[in-house]
Image 1 (cartoon, one colour):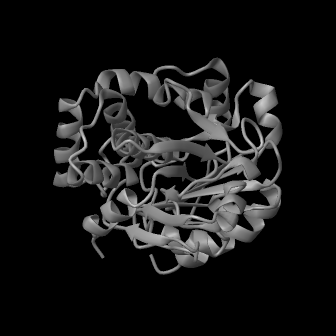
Image 2: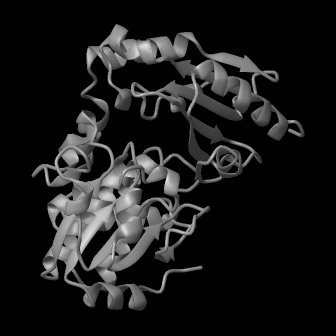
Amino acid sequence: MPINWDVLAERIHSSNRFVLTSHIRPDCDALGSELGMAGILQQLGKQVRIVNGHPTPPSLSFIDPENIIEVVGETTAAENVDGDCMIVLDTSAWAQLGPTGDVLRSFKGQKLCVDHHVGEDDLGTEFFKDTRAEATGHLVAKLAKHMQVPITKTMATALYAAIATDTGWFRFSSTTSDTYRVIAELLDCGAIPAEIYGELYERDTLGRVRLRGRILSRTQAELDGKLVYTHVLKDDFADTGAVASDTEDAINLTLAIRGTQVAVIFVEQPTGGCKMSFRSRCAVDCNVLAREFGGGGHKAAAGAFLDATYEQAAQIVLPKVRQAMANL
């Protein structure tokens, strides 16, 4: 269903103190949507805090030049987070909220969710979702336009990064003519593609490069090359000097292999457990797969987390993937 922008605008006008949050292991769409929404609210004279469950990855720190994003358990305590309205952006799943899930549960004010993912949990929020959108950042840009709030250069940079990364720099099938229209508007507002691309993809550390070498060297193929998967072990981070966020988008390296229809990457987390990312170029629905393990996302891209080692997770997940691909 399309979003009723008038109702969302009314909800925003009815509150003064806002708390914004998004999913753990935040990516550009999560961060860009938060910062874009914060910009809208600030120009409307509202008080705004952005509070996440995980810190911003160092590689994405450019998106928050004033370092305004707080982290539960690091720069603020959960009990110190309050306000009139809490807005969850770019996720509709409890499992993706991490520490801010407790904040949402106990929050006494109005609760809203702005998202583009297919699945959803009962977050106790009023949902404003459009699953046709390629990125939550696009929805935030539409809200700014609807509420006649000017998009600043900082907002434009954040929203451009959100949309560009969630579309694989405009190469995924989710990219539409509307994508390019909103991108053109963000350029007019000051976004500079070459600078954003450089910050995202031309600032690799030696550790990140070494880690990606390991990821590629472990790539395995099955089902006549239709299924490709690889993994990262917890010790790899210390061995290579990489950090957990250096695995972001690594799965897309496997999609470059000719014939790949489904790709999976398993990433053991430094703090324990294993994160899985799924990608599909066929009828296999990644969102359906991920939700079997408590995750979610989109048909073509989704993620999940298991409290397991790589070996344990692979034994649980790969049979399900093979089963989903049985009729290809």
